[in-house]
Amino acid sequence: MMNNLMMMRCFNISKTAVLKSSRISLTLRPIACHFRSGLRLQGLHFCGCQNRLRLGVCRPNRIVRLYSSQEDPNALRRRPQLLFAIYLSFFMGGCLIFAIVLREFDESKQRWKGVERVRDSLQTGRPQMIKYRDTILPIFVEKILDDVENFESNENDIWVVSFPRSGTTLLQEMVDLVNSEGDFVRVLTKTLEERFPYFEYMYPGIKSIEKMESPRLIKSHLPHSLLPKSVREGKGKIIYIARNPKDTCVSYFHFVQLLKPTFRFNGNFSEFFDRFINGRVPYSPWWRHVKEFWDIRDSPNILFLKYEDIVEDLGGTVVTIAEFLGKEVHPMEVKMIADHCSFDMMKVNPNLNFSWWKETGIADKKGQDFIRKGKIGNWREMFDVNQNLQMETMKYLKLNECGLRFSEGEEKEEE
Image 1 (cartoon, helix red, strand yellow):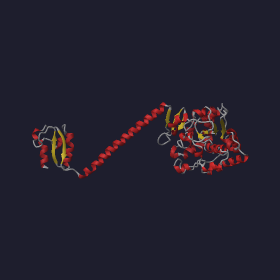
Image 2 (tube, rainbow, N blue to C red; image 1 turned 180 degrees about the vertical axis):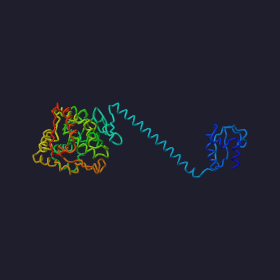
Image 3 (cartoon, helix red, strand yellow; image 1 turned 60 degrees about the horizontal axis):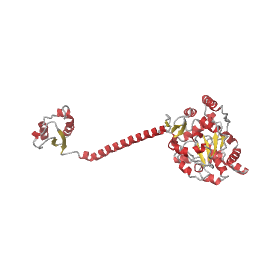
Image 4 (cartoon, rainbow, N blue to C red; image 1 turned 135 degrees about the vertical axis):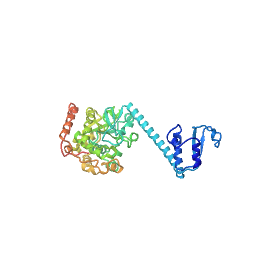
């Protein structure tokens, strides 16, 4: 210890100098800390030393490094772990920066295409919607817009199109049975998703739909203006179903609640209503969606149906669909299809009620069923006076001139 003190004094370095002043204090401060901890100092290396023992030839104030003859064994063992943690933090930080840059680049590229991501304060996590050509779409459509536009439909394709929660499931099942001429084995052994794929959804995907055998049955919620170019040019037959917007809004809200694990909407009905009426839910605005098909309802490849008319006369709707598709159905088959598509039967049918969504985690296991109440006029249980007035105003301003009207009867059944 005395030798070390003498060495420090030889260079006129006091403890005060180490801890406070001079150009070399920052360099020697760790030395003092180690010195005070009882480490033996073996030597000082100086820049320009001829001989470590000949201290007089060393240039003052040019200390390069200090080394110790004794070091803490625990510190030596912790050093590799510390280095690993430092390198890992640098690596993770680099990955994070790269991911942020990549995301910003991807969003910029999408904006050049006219795609804007829509953020909702009541949705947690990443954005779940995009805006494209003044239409709000679910986020999973973002990367396939070109594939959608270039999809080649053929004359035998049958499309069922609707705004979400307008009776789509009911119509799909009726169309499938009519087209297959009453093949109940098919509809009782395969789920609706397998028989009637959702065109713009991730599963099974557009590439898989392209490989399906003709005639292909395809479901979509896209408005007419965003359907594939070949469809807009008249290839394939389209059966469109529209529903009273009040019941649509209520059913849509409960559907979003069911899909909380994936859609992550944390608002109440009043907050959802505001988004529905202002065109800020997927596939909105509702009024333009239905009006686009209403305006072309007389086209030979378009059949426009109203949900309220379907549930009022299931048998008559079966006949109408058969005529549109050029199929012949026996009166007994008409009755069997109508019975099969009744609300009570659909609700308990495991191939139609989407119960598998809860098993796979897409839907909330404790949430309501996909096929819920099945009543026309259920909106009266949810709407207040102001909400009803807002909806009536929207219908009048957007649809009055085109002549589209909806029934608001009570105690009718839905999908």
